[in-house]
Length: 291
Image (cartoon, rainbow, N blue to C red):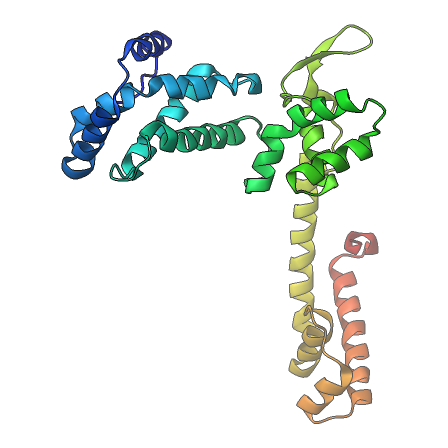
């Protein structure tokens, strides 16, 4: 049996589920065996339909998280089918007892995925914190009204087995829903604009980025042309010393070239002067090379 997508079909399914007859232990066992051994679709449909009341009851407990009840029921039905696939009818356990865990787990996973665009924790402790924070906070606040926020967070953390900072973070997340950047806002002068229009970005403007890229490419061409005036040894030293990320030492280059490190320094100095002259010949304005 597949869940329906339209609102009308979901309502019809709920009405049908509420009218479905309860199963005796023997009937339930027989249907589960038929599904396990023969993959009898009719047996699965009858077994799942008779337990849709359970799905609806579990889903109703999570209505306060702001998600459509129909969606919660649909996810609960997924958990019900998962339970049917894993159920061992020969064990002395009623299917409803076994299926409740799978139904609740499926609904909770759906809520965690869709409650906020910010991905929350999925560990067992984080799930417990998400689904029990409001209840524990209300309970502790009612018992001890003089508790500070830090004391309240500590008591909740001790009860669930998490860190107080995790409680504070989750409390902040649950304090308000996500807000769209396209949500309308009104400024002090009464004009309306989207929320994103009031955000300030430190990033460069698109025209500044394009201009910088053009200038950078121009400098690269000037440098590549100026490097042609260097000898092979000068070019190698300049590349190893000035144009590589690591920057070779004078001593290591001297060992590679078979000369002293002082000689490497002299060649490097002469090469840099030649480069400077060549660059200024191509572009006399020195400010053009500033980064």
